[in-house]
Length: 326
Ligand SMILES: Cc1ncc(COP(=O)(O)O)c(C=O)c1O
Image 1 (cartoon, rainbow, N blue to C red):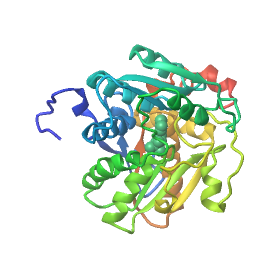
Image 2: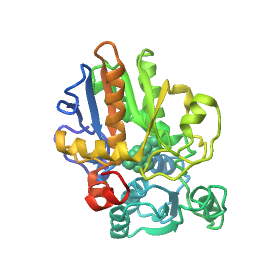
Image 3: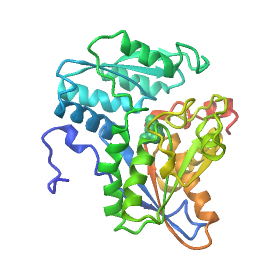
Image 4: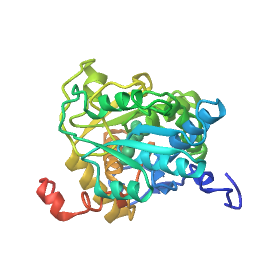
């Protein structure tokens, strides 16, 4: 942090996001709920942190050179973080995204000059052209590219162990009972959990997984179930991936698209917080947790990205009605 709030370039503004207490949406619970507003990062999401950390680490270790092409698969937010880093540091960027990604994210990626490879999200996960399978094959066919691999590269978790976790600990003055967050690549929740548990092993960590993703059944029953399509962007997966470290997770909740989106809208109408769909899942989870507790606790969650990415979906009444959510 820099006292005067002046930075050498925009990358200096990544991280050190505010933590806010929620007061209205929490009126029926005794516990206190705080959220870290990750949509206030320069590209509007928590993923700016990993883009900066992973590329700067690769630079320090001589694994990437100016001008090189970065390739990554992303639900859009990591792509935007990488676009920022690429522009600032002189890299090229190609991203692989699913076709269910919101129009706003595509428009922003285009505005940032990113090359986009769109994948048909109706393909079965085992198809060679599915989101998870096509990326390694594109990487293999592109000599000299750099693949951060946010799903399997534990530097993703390390980013949050080194930055988000310590920030939360400091902002909460070390008084935290629960940390609850959505699980996508797992980097955020597992990196923060590892750090917080090292400071205070009594802190309990709860992950939120969408209906249709496979993490919930694996966590509880060690079963790899068949995935099903869902609409929440950024959470869950069709495969087990290396950044998901189940050993630091104490409990897992499963959330539907409808619940996440209705709670996303409640965050706006009750708190004035314009956050995205996974933030609705996060606040729903934090409230469910608070209602289940016998005594008041201090609960921390994360709002990963901004409502501005979902104006044509979650905040569009016609879309919500068409999907049966209103
Ligand atoms: C909107 C949104 N929320 C939550 C997450 C989950 O974060 P993580 O990948 O660190 O588990 C992501 C990840 O892409 C995201 O884009």
